[in-house]
Length: 569
Image (cartoon, rainbow, N blue to C red; front, side, top):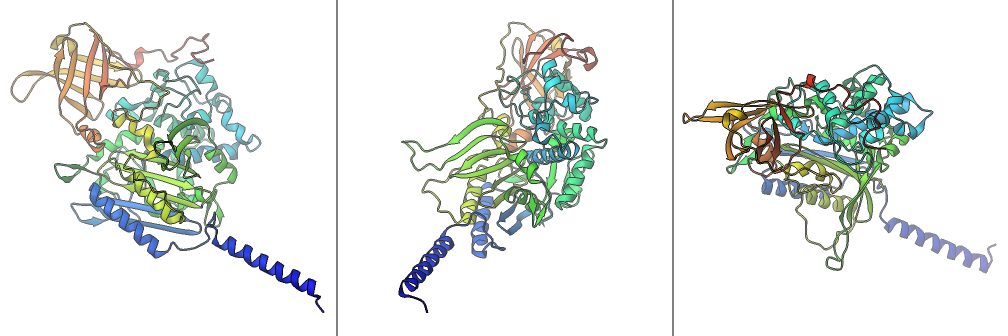
């Protein structure tokens, strides 16, 4: 028989237990366990996407979502406008710098398998020690001997980015590309800043492939097989993009209509595709983004070891940017980047940890965010018409719909993708300049150059070669004609004794600028003396100087003295 006191205790315990269960049920789950995203949520997301596509003239748009155990992938619009071919789950979009995190996964899991006894220390061991037979030569002796995989994957080498030669396609394949990096000048102090580099990320993959006697292509293919991403591939120099299976045709918006983008321009990334040249579809990317929402798992399978996921997402290069609440803007949502992991940005959004990366290979734009503590990942992609100002706002709306969290009462923001600030800094005229590295301004010179004196071939150890010739233009007048790499060429006019500017493109190179919303671009040739020219784009000098007649063979193989210790100690 139960006593009265025991009965009261039992009743009280039951009441407390019931109350606790009710509270737990009412609280938002950190890892939602629902297997399906509610259809009403998906309908709201579709409405947001279609409205944004219409406002921004987007031909095709893709989305991949993860929420707990639920996954979702869908595309909208046309992958080929002229042929009226709709995009589907297998349509391939260029994902740009999202490719970098794939390279980082290849590198980290290969290193873990090679040196399990070292743990994370393998990332901080000099490559010269791990791969002594790989001829890694950088701009000074110290970098060459001490650079690590963490340095390469977290943009800590601090050498000048390879933009000018990259865009113009001035390199003769990947070997030429990597070899020329030894002539890249320092942009910030070694390991004391962030100098974004496509080539050095790609180079990390080439080095680990050398260590296991294979190719980066084979290592990446194996990773994709393990992830179940069977449709994903990469850009090659031999591609006939628009006539290849499943590929989204790229478009720009010009003169009130969509116009096809010259896909030859996409091949700029082919020699170093590990840094930004992958093509993927929403059906594959929904598997990839699960890795970050589920700590290396796809479904119930631990595809990437938790240890490797920790290496990937741990901040390796500090860098604060973003927005916080102020007295003037107390309703601002906390939205900050706190640093860079291994080819991944890490930050905080509305109090939640967030990792991700953006990708921009004009005019394709892609990006993903993952919120590991909520079990949420979001990937979006488009095939034009270029930089989408609503990209960030679209992802923000989707985040609040998936999380069920109340959205702060603040005005929607139309701004470039938060994960893409370093990539877009060049294309947007340095709007998002990283405060650590510095760019050169156009130098002033009093030298006088005639048209005949300007004619010649000019070389840069780092940025390739360009030529200036004297031709007869369409109205029968002699005019200087400039060409650089495979893709950049046009007509020059003299605007000062030593300065020449591009007045008319003779190739589709302008499309790169147009896709990014900055018109036809601006190119200037500034002679510092009769044999030395400075090349500027959009008023910025992003390359080393070009010397008359200079060839790669004219330069020393080792760009520093044997007894030097380099510029960094």
